[in-house]
Image (tube, rainbow, N blue to C red; front, side):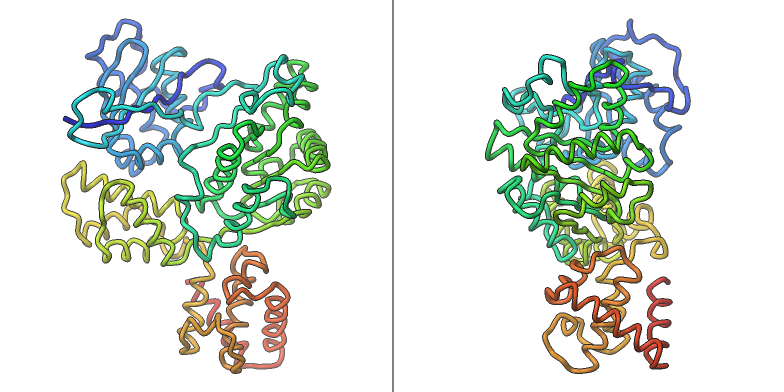
Length: 502
């Protein structure tokens, strides 16, 4: 008998937003009101017809074809997924698509539930299932407050503040490496003493899929674990904007203002999407000021450094730089292997070292892509009954990973290329030696890191034995001086840039 874990995802309702952006109408037109329990497959087939029109063939085959309809009771559709990791991936990437599809096919009152197989040997229903929180992308009220709650935000516990945290995003299951060392240390410091450190605001930036959301939600989860009455709110800039617009339309600006200024910790994801929204930026500016002056903690994420964000008010950029701004880089090889090892263990599968290393070496651009490759590999083994071999790993990597020419440049790539070019042990780049050839190679690495990546000076220094940002600036200036005066170094720079860019 299969042991399963039951996950109630969301109840789709009209307040979740317009569904007109969904493309395609395959299988539509049949009312769901009269369908019985045996119609789960037909109903899910209608959903798949819509989903297929909105994702690539690879995504459809890897994710949605693996879902198996179990039951339709007239109000709730139950689907079975192969693993909890599979569920997490769906939660992160396709919650909105599922929500809109359910609204179109099942109707505005319908619910969707997942059962995740975790064991084959359970004997009773209570051992088979456990309720877990819904998807972050699931339908939520258009405004996170009511008039009665918003007018006195400081009078009650955090129940007045819907947090939308994923309980699985913790520091304990966040893999720490050189690529995120400073960001992780700062996040832990903030979580242990919100509003009481110099890291206010804490701004974490970097390309998508590297774990920014995991890290900031881990802060919120730890704060609430230590103080359940703390008022902690997680949101994103798009949701903040929509709530502000709705507050204007419903004449609830005072409620909106009181609500956001009543939190102890405000976490705003993807702050770059405030660009160009002048009125929303003005509201966020005053919200930021009020919270900061009151000693409340602000935590922001972005895909770029604040100074590089387009169409953002200089007043906001200035305030974002009051605290600590730190980046997350794509993980190095050792960190990628550690991530794969942990995720595979969570799925109850011990991957051989050669497969871990192969996937880690060839999937480099983001943690999200790395996890996608792993889940595709596990899906082929558990669902397609394929043998777990290095050949299968190569097949999955070819289908999931980006080409080397399109992947994100990392400091690890630069260190590897430079050390090979100068025929040096890579570890010497972080050593304290002052030998000229090693110093030159280290300076070359720092210069190329500043030129070819979005990494901050402080973070670049951390990758080279914990050197500070002034050392990085000096190194960059030295290479610029060499370029003007030394033909050999100028040729070295040109060759290395070309080699790194492929």
